[in-house]
Image 1 (spheres, one colour):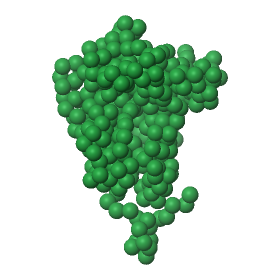
Image 2: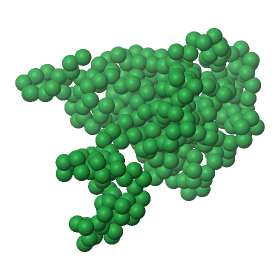
Image 3: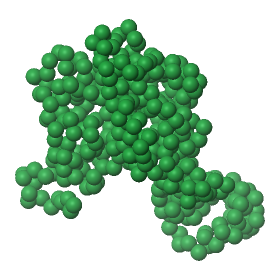
Length: 392
């Protein structure tokens, strides 16, 4: 399978004939016009550039006069030499730098897989204290099962860079961090140094992904959060994105794209999500709009953020009640299913592709629709209402 399938995602029409017929007639109104009763199929084919006349005629003549929406689905491209059909998400020849990948069960990893499935080259930045474990796990094949792409091949990570996005350049690093043995064995891990290393190794990138956050006092209510803890959350979770764009934009090709990850706590109260993290996500979303303007006008770079629902990742477990958040979403979201990391990854692949060429400065919700809810329907006050309940 791996030998015959190309790496790529495409959107294909499941029932194209009737809808496609409708589009053709609209597009060829001038050709058909008043002579529609006597027009020949050959003339119609010539006017509308229909390559498969027999297939078109058979489907049109045998189908009832009923127009339906085209159903689309994401699928891996089968056959390297087979012409692509539908709307391809094609990132072949593109290079992505993903900051914040340290294991195989978070959103950063899922985004890397989706971009790789669409053909992009993957380069990652890993938090310095987690670097050795991550690289060792890759070498030993611990992630091989998670690396499998839709075509059966394994996702390749071209290079892993040590990265601590809290520090912009070497001058910002305090002496105690420099002396830390987990940092002493690595070199060039500040944002500025990593951007310079990527430029030296690859010349340029096309895609930048910010998939990192940290709130040292995330379990504390905001009223109990210290200034140091609050500012640390802002620094690691929101300003780090500003810094990454600032240093990577000079090596991004025009027409490139950047995305980050946010959370609904930026605009709604999520009790227990503390330590200034809700403020950090709000800042990230606000910055996304400003960065979209500045990066778009000066560098033709698009900037968006994905507001993802709760995921049972290692990082999320630091909050302490991630299972409760997932259960709440299952009970109250319009779509009653557990969110998959792949769904966020596929959204990212779309956002950085040419299919999203007019989308920038946007917050895209991937949370089974939970963001749209005003109240929790699992509350006892709704017990007498006929509301569909979770069947999981």
